[in-house]
Length: 211
Length: 211
DNA sequence: TTAAAAATACCTAACTATAGGTATAAAAAA
DNA sequence: TTTTTTATACCTATAGTTAGGTATTTTTAA
Image (cartoon, rainbow over all chains, first blue to last red; front, top):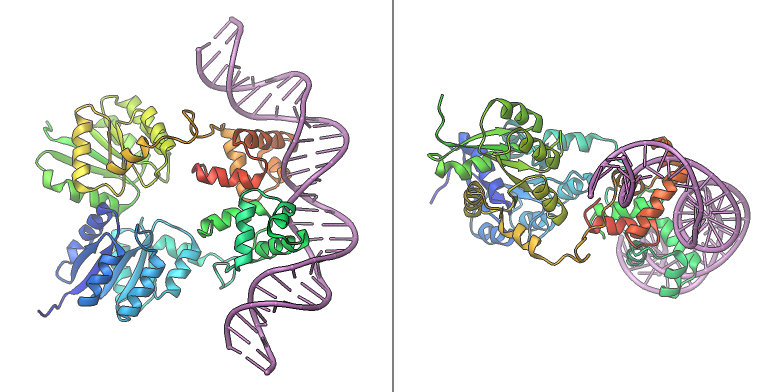
């Protein structure tokens, strides 16, 4: 049962993306063997019983979040290389993937050449990005290295009420707090998200899937 | 120079989607010949000099909007069948495509079988949707029959700037308008969405996929 | 070629949010 | 058990939004 090819697993819920990736990898069929999954949990079962050298992992799967799946993969098999794959161009998503153990991030508009290059780089232990992803990562970050704003329970609660268009006063009444306290929480949210008003705050929260 | 195969053009800016579609169509290679483009305008040039039976058109292209491109295709060559192709699950987008002359709409998670079925149906003059797209179209819309609040171009523009956290004054400067005018537009938006402040407005817009 | 819709612009007053602080008690983590 | 984080609350002033109007011009559709 010895396998001398490099095993690449593709996890994506779009059959046409799977086909596309397989097709792009076909010229290297002598080196790479591919296997594909449309659900994260299916892959996890597979991984428990098989060796996988590299995973091309779509971030937005129907069953589990890409971030969680990536962590799980690295937990089960630390030597398996994970490359994130997504249409989402948010820095924060890329950073979260890296923190979860991914070796790089490809946007779905990756060119065939880039794809092969990134796979090779990643297999050699490098961190690798597709052209556009690199560009996004290279942009100076507003938030330095802390990426995603981590908010407290109270802040989350207030964020949700703000999203309902409630005023500081209304939120204070609802939560039995002083309006001044609610105001402080809102100010802290603005700081954490590095935005200057509620409108921007909400959009940032939506982008980071907090709302 | 006679061509007896059915010519299918694929327009998508993601090489891997193009590969995927070609690969899915390969079993029918005796019937279908494919040609692909990553930019809308490239295809328009092609279409002016060649016959194309069916177009698989990605809605979100870098150069032009899918809606506009669809209209243009039907103007140049009314007999060419257009099938919209997208990740976007908004009803309104699907409706707009149909109004622009498309014969159907496929979500990118379409299965290989569905893809072939939809292509055949469309070539036979039917309106055709992928499974999930059909489901979305079949859902009762929450806004009665007028569904999504219809907003004007100017309002959309202002909505986007509001989402960036810009103030009335800043928007006015940017659009060379009086702040009073911008304010009026914002007030009209609040009315149309039946909300009372910008925060609610933005969340409603996000829900209706206008942002 | 009209009628309707969209875009423009104005007014006033009341209300609400934002900037830039400080400070203390209660939970949670180290 | 000490340190850090979270949650609480306050102050002053300025900036910006919202409510409730009216009104003209320019486009678009019938």
